[in-house]
Length: 526
Image (tube, rainbow, N blue to C red):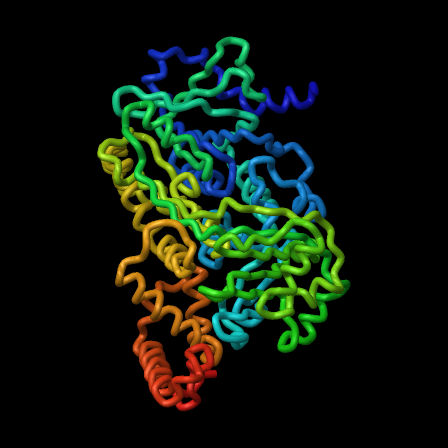
């Protein structure tokens, strides 16, 4: 207990050199201080970006966090030691290639950190056996390579890198009650007086902590809409599209020397398996995902209320019911090492802060606090990384010889973040809206046309390796979806469509599900 108290005093002493601010003092924020609310990946990456632009960055987190003095967790410990505020950490978390590029730019050598911690190197077009809308996709080596790990390991590595930066200070066990605002300017935050590590809690029932910038990265449970409404800024417009997807996950120990076998025979083995659902009639999907410590995470999902169960017999039956028995065969020889965990909060939700007529200067939001995606598409962590980069870019663009124009920054960041969110939002919701029981605004005619075009592109990935690689790179946010409109792809999509229409006219009794969308005369590219 004494040691813990001494560590807290050391970490937080510079914050409390001044007396607790009263309401008048709160209107004058301390120079060059930024506060980040939330210690998840979105908050950590925002803090990293701000560390280059502010003298002091405070990261406030409700959950207890390990300090720099504590022994780092080993891969044998990290995977099962998630924070209380991250129940979704029990499930597969994918850092897309674009996200890993951003982490490497923010923390040079981060890929080596992952490798040293046992994260598995995966060439996504070669090492992942994927069944798309048709059958198994071709496998070909590419430069689309990342390292796969648990969310807990990834977050712990980023946090330890950040704890090594002198001007970034963590305050854990801290609950934020609301914003402190003077006029239309955010000047800080209000903390609960009984926060676990609030060393001045005996001096007041509330503590005001000043800052020039407050960044909300508190995730999908952010209270900012309520706080802003209480301050008179009105209701935040919100759009929700819910495919009623639920998933269940279990962790397994790989069979002994499995990765060694893959290294010896990469063409006939795999590191990961991905079985997509097939709208509108096959709602079940599954992924087998390698992580540190020679483990697999198996996550299965069902859309439109076809939820997987938590009991062992039901879970295994659900795995066997997927479109191919590949995952069921793999885990038959693997040792389960966890309970079966469920998760249901999977709706896409976009809070349109950029549409508010008035907005307090000096406030920014990013990550799930603004927009949550259906987790099945793996966009959340990479979206948070893109938001952090956008935060830094907007701060730089609002800087002039006269200093930082806070009004310009606050407006610019909201608009730019909305632009960054637009693409992954359309990708996730466009797919979810193909399911008949999805709740939310229905797609307009251009969106329906895009869905039909994308479906035909995905059917071609079974036989065309170049299209398969292009689709993967778009999913990993390396390429723009505009790549799907390259003339060579559009010609093959048009040819397949014409071929299908001709077959439908010649053999109407076959039904569209029996028509081959990839005729041999189109020339499958290898």
